[in-house]
Length: 549
Image (cartoon, rainbow, N blue to C red; front, side, top):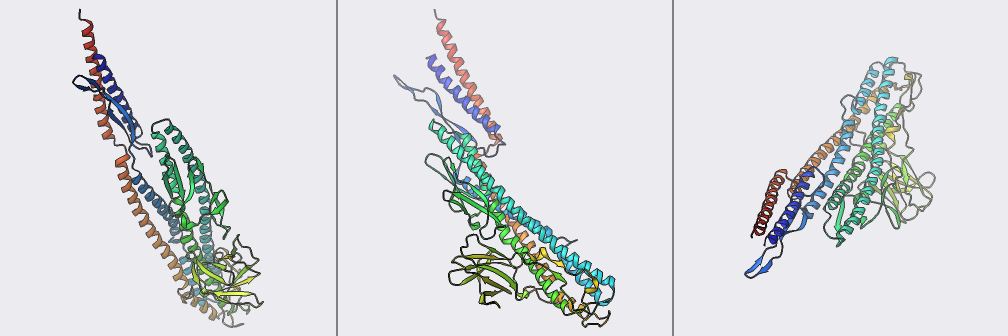
């Protein structure tokens, strides 16, 4: 009898030790990211039949469970992916907002200074100092255009680099998940659940999901199949598919995500990357950065073109007709798709800069006609077909003329960027202040300021896209970015609150509560001590039997 009592108590001691070890492990991993609380599950052993029934044989540990809810975890991952996208977008657009909204050195301030000094030239048209000041303010304005464009280009280059970094992270996480799939399958085959490895795998999936939104499917054997971008597989069992940063086929200067599968690499459409840091970065580039650069280029284009036209109408101090006051380059206006099979090439010129939009365009041949769409929303543009002076086909739309040379094949496409290079290439074309064409007539003397008045009038004319003055267009650009930044901040904050709520819900199930664990520690300590007391009692009974004479 005492032997049976000892065995029963020993089962309790063993169970208590497992339970105490489990509680200790929970406490130790309190600050470990991705750890899921574990619980020792106890069950009674089968009994031994005696004359009047059954006598219990103690307790056994059936398993150590991982407190985990797949549904809530998936909800949390989805929210985290969206939060990372909003945060990445907000971080990027804030940089543009800070750049454009500077109160000390902004484009609007430089624009106002330039025209203010033109007004001074009207009052002192023959004063060399006044003329030199105008050139100085013109150079200051041009430098502001150049520097702003450079900062925006640097952001563009930074995004290219970030896409490369993201692709490396995706590959690294995918490989680690695949390795854990293999180890988990192997250990499950020998019995039991490798809880620590399961936690590690889920945490890796969470980190991967923050970079690019993923979907996870658990197979019958417990392996994770991880996919992204509407079904592109990253992990399947212990196999992985790689991604990489590759030049866009439509715009080689722009890096996008490429997916490497058995048939070779292919571009991942940006619209299919719906969450994660990568989504926020790509959305910022296509919806904000491109648009801001184009708005800047549009203002620079109209300013330079209209100012030059009026400057040509006047005369300088030497009685000569005015030359170009500003110069700019439109050298890089067309990108050909690398998938083109025809020999066609496109060249772009301006027919009316007042009608030029702050947009990029896709020009595509459908086998019989050319189709023009604005980017990034792909809205069709009504383009008028005709011929240029050399008889080449020509498309006219939005103040542009696109001449086509060579033969196009079906689905050949081109990206037209009419204003993307203007702000960065803008320069003051004259350095001699005497060449400022302030006079309205030749040989009219230093006091003639008639053309200078017309140059000042440009400040208040609605010239940019036929809707805004130069200052108004600058203010509108800054205001739009400010509004978008404020909206992005609200979206990021709101999504952060959703993540916090779901995290609290997930932690209520899987998280470690130190107060609860301390209570469990005391409970299982008492349980352990009670079983030792049973062994002590059984030992005393056994000693008593031995002492019977």
